[in-house]
Image 1 (cartoon, rainbow, N blue to C red):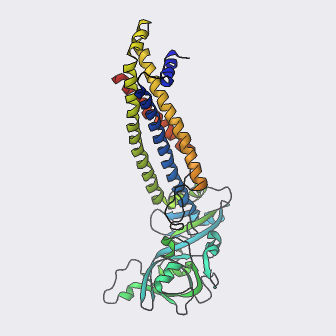
Image 2: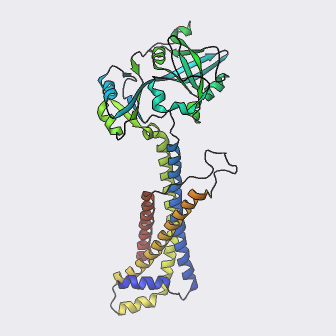
Image 3: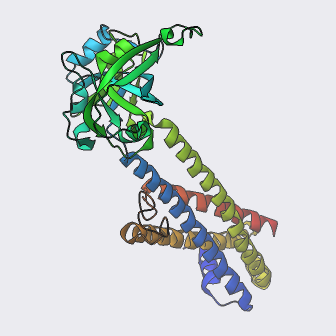
Length: 399
């Protein structure tokens, strides 16, 4: 064993002439351990929330979404769309036309997001699982057009699941300004009959805004015959997002479910990084205890240093003893904190020790979610060792 490491290990575990040095060394180890545990637990909680959000992808979030980079619509006669229809990489290919519209019912006017879909949509999205009512899940017949609205949209309109009178739907004509003398002339108008069904995703983003209709109805209302605002795709087994990107080319944006919710995940990543940064500053403060412990130890061991110098030890070797002493303190705290953090996260996963609120059912989940990722464990260990070892070198050189 390297004699510097051997002496450092003896200094770490031996009793000091001043009991306060032992206490400060223990506090240094505990400070590093607690900070390491806090780092790991905090990152794991953010991972848990990311997994929770990912698990809440709805029937409205397609597996793959293809949208135009320019122009706003996709021509359904284009070779790219025909290639998607014939590709073995695609299990279901659904064109959709989506836009803002206004529903007028009696004395109520409600802006909504009208989404026109073809018959494949119900098969692709599994909408049958979230439909409520006694109606039939159809959006068009020979002469009538039907709607399936979000449950909160129905509430805003003061309607039940089924209603006798048709909905009056208005959308601005493409490329026209509003005629102030006759405003209605600047809007396309049509009617939707009740299907006797509503959907409930349990997310306000969809339940309070979206109304489903047939694709031809939406194309007529938005002056976009033969076009779609996006193509929603269910992949065949073994296919990937990159396969679809290769088919449609560079003029189209291809997004998986995570990329469709990119803003949400970007915010969560920023919050995770900020929390990690603040905890790193707390780690620096914890390392001050270690610096104090080393400085007092060096003062106490002044005679030992003189003896080692008499035996031929160089200044570099003597510094190495105290550097190793500090590194052992940091390593002990890092390992203990990592093990404690993993254990605490596993207990939280199993028993939900830390609750989200005082009353069960107040939130989507009752306890804070945690997911321990190996990459985060390595990041925390690397951060603690890097910051700690740098502090050790500074302390030894300074004193």
